[in-house]
Length: 638
Image (cartoon, rainbow, N blue to C red; front, side, top):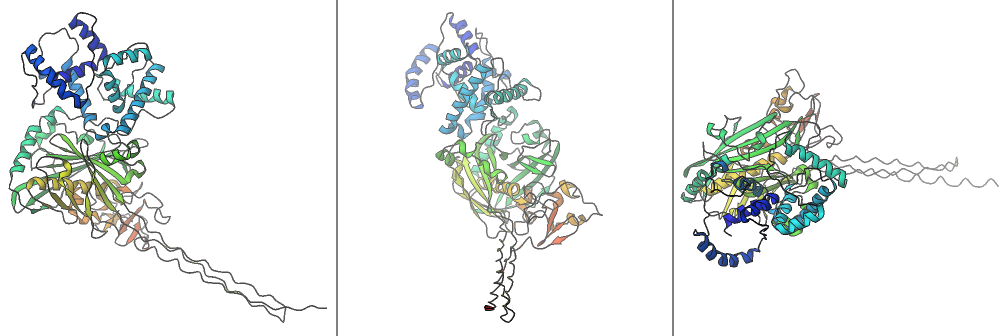
């Protein structure tokens, strides 16, 4: 059939009981039209056979699809009277949401991931067989296989009837995610039943959870965004340098008209009971009248029990971050927001080839790795995976222990000498390493990942990023851009390229800020969580910009405008995100109550020590104790 008819047929099949009832109402007898999914290579030939039959019978074009405005189903012209009782327009709208969950995530095309999903779907059916009274909620990988099974209606009817005693229905109308809703309570019931039936945690799985949905109000912005892209593409091309401005901390809110748009990337700010940090900067070039604006936000939520959030920041959890790049006063053209294992699988879930093709996370890397989803004009275009590599704390040397000299014996007194004790060699210390940011870009829905080239002149300066824009697989994007996190400048061939240079530059800056290791404040420290220090405390000086939560051998974020704009530290009172070093890694010292001041580290009691920023030092040689010699033989008394 035509693609629009195929889509409605698809949606009808996903309510199998309604499908059987409606087909019988329309046909008037016990006749169920089966459905099967043809191979892509077969479709062209099938269309060629079907098209003339369709046009002669239906008297309308076979292909009628084209760009359509984003509107609610209630605003769509209602079809003519029909015996079909199922609300197909509402079903199609719901499946649009499901389609976003799986169609734009490349790993849903990867064989190993899909084979595992088939096994999990079979287990889901087994759960229904063991506990038939439950209403169970599948994860999206399970639901995708469930949908595929239903698209072969006769096989689905026969096989689920044989397994369960009657055909298993599928109800996709339960979508309310509010606390206490049927969906939420049924999900908790599903997790409990799965644990009880199979003695394992589940069915939660990395890469198979809800991603959020683009709203109708966001989709309605697409024409405006695409028009802005088209104008940028028409702008004169010339290699030029674009410079970012000094960032604005806590700027005014978004333009009023944006409040009516429910942006997918900004979902992390909704209902936050904690802190949100927003910063902006602009970028311009003397050779172009075009100007861009970047807006960055981080959301931190107060802990509720044991957090499973991305990072712990004092008593807060870092629950989300995003970037918006736009023309000043305009809706965002490109966004990037933090995603985790709810959207990305772990590397072990993919085959070796799949790990090169599709973005994934490495479970063991934990907080040293993070990912951003890049969207342009309402479409997912890439995933940027960042990793902090090579960081290490200094290890002080252990001094050697000097040997003890032996004593000589005395033949006269027949006293035997004692042998000296050999000293022990010291253990050489290890100097610290600042580490650096590593980036890999994966185009969507799939394509080989590409390593971004990052050149770092010094360990105390952030790197300069170079990337070939062809990785995005978008029209008009060829050539490379260079974004310097150390100077805050972007080199690009045109305003359109400069836009993407700012996107990649600020995305790299965000990942740098989120992943660079730092000291974690602990309970009771006056300057923690942005509070002003007590003037009478030993840490009153912590408000000074000379103090930092970052080790002195690493990048000091406050010195670099792009890092500050990305949410980086301005002073210890404004530290936002970053990977805590933990407690006990500074040669047994408690890290959590310390701050760095120049080359020294100071705690809140006012004590200072200078051995943490530099070289680990040499343990030295213990030396040899030497031989005590022999006292000789006293002879025999005879």
